[in-house]
Image 1 (spheres, rainbow, N blue to C red):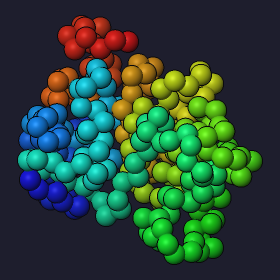
Image 2 (cartoon, rainbow, N blue to C red):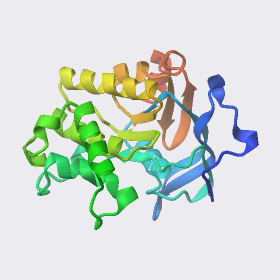
Image 3 (cartoon, rainbow, N blue to C red):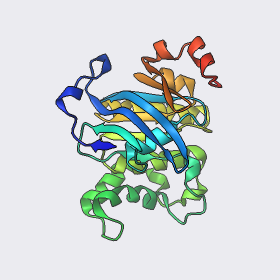
Image 4 (spheres, rainbow, N blue to C red):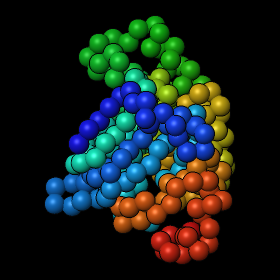
Length: 247
């Protein structure tokens, strides 16, 4: 198993003419006694929106965890074309409702990777947090408890935490699941703006509309790569029927 943070010369050309932000070769990963990802070969193009699509249990969350560095591959290679650690936004349901955290404290946690949880935040850190709150339109909610928020507000707080990390790679696990259409549209617009600002965005999603709006898609099925390319090419009716994706 090999993990690298500077792409070698022979990996600098990505499909569709984009330099890859992440590339993996023969990648396998999983949990004790339960392999999940099996021999994945693909690239995540930089400065683009990539959707990870597939049925429940297909390996989308595991692949995000591997790219985020919270799950170690069991074999294969993972190459990061960059030096900044990724920012990972887990599913909203993975964050407990009862945590005694305000929205601001939640977003401030995004600075811990650089500052550490026990050191006081600097003026620059506070400015970064303020910018993230404003960017997500939740500045007025800064003093509210996280558990008091609506689903859409809470998801924006978690994305603001990811944004506060200052990474050029944002990984999101089902960022719009369970949200109303207005909240989904607001988050979709924000992610598009982040790509325009130079952030590479990867989101696992069951939202076909969000997947079709992406620059590229990776389709997973039983831990294997079932499709890789432009949404119009890989999200066809026939292809989705083959993987029994319940859209």
